Structures are given as C-alpha cells and as structure tokens.
Image 1 (cartoon, rainbow, N blue to C red):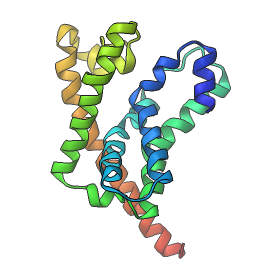
Image 2 (tube, one colour; image 1 turned 90 degrees about the vertical axis):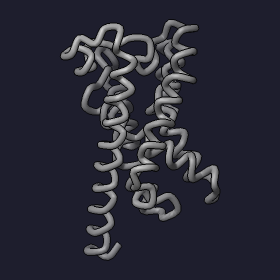
Image 3 (cartoon, helix red, strand yellow; image 1 turned 135 degrees about the vertical axis):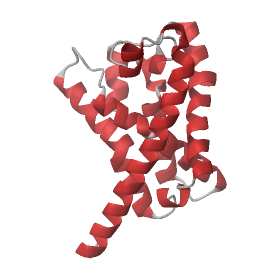
Image 4 (cartoon, rainbow, N blue to C red; image 1 turned 60 degrees about the vertical axis):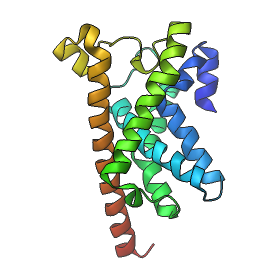
Length: 188
C-alpha cells in the first residue's frame, strides 16, 4: 500500500505494472488462496519474475526519492528477490524445489518474456512510460551500456533476462535449501 501511495503522489502509478510489483501481487495471491492448478502457474510466474527483485537491488533506480520511499523500495525488492521464495517454500504448498527443473525454469522465463512483450510493451507504447525498460535501454542497464546494444536491445534483453531468470531460480533455490537446513538444525 505504501508503494501505491508513493506512486499516486508522484503521478507514476503506471509503474506499478513493472514485473517486481506483479511478483508481489502473485505472492499475495498465493498466500491468500488455497492450493490449486492456477496457483501452480502463478507460483511458477512468481519464481520466474523473482530475479527482478535481485536486479532491482543491484541496479536500483531511486535517485532523488525521499528516504522512506527508498526504504520501501528496498524492502519490496528484498521480498520479491529472496525472502518471498523462502517464505512461500517454507509454507510447503509451492516449494521452489518442486519447480526446479529445466522445463519449468524455461517456462518461468517465457512467462516473464510474454509479460514484457504482450503486456508492458503495448502499454509503454501507448503511455510513453518506459515500463521495465520495454521501450529502450537505459544508462543503468549494464548490458545496454557496455555492449552498446542500440536497436538490438530487445533481442539481447530477452536473452540476458532469461539467463537472469535461471540465475534467480538457482539463487532462490539455494537460499531455500540453506534456510530449510538451518531451520532443521535450530529445530524450527
């Protein structure tokens, strides 16, 4: 709610459509509903989108924001990146370890790309809001800057974001495994 309030105040509510915000919506849906086949797809989408939280932590875009909004930004991205997968997996219904197969990780990356190209791109073209950099690359995207991708940005962005999705699955699965072992050691 704090994020929505900040976006309303700054007249940037459209950015609530970015994948990290969609991932929070997925997480809320999964924690507030019973286990279902739809929940399995939403969980796959959540795990497929969660790498964006890691990217948001590493390459933040919060210059000039008030400190409270920066704090909300980092808490939000921490939940999407690692904490959410740990808590969701600890709940047992949608454990990331059950989704850890090459086919499902590819499916998560494909869901992310479909969201980028079929949802964010048209809205970006209509609104001229560069949602999740779907219109063009930006200076804080290291791949765009280092490799000077220019008009090839979209093709390469889909490729390196798919790689980031795989890395996010690996990192989050590792975190869940470590958390599970630590909780068994401590007796939680």
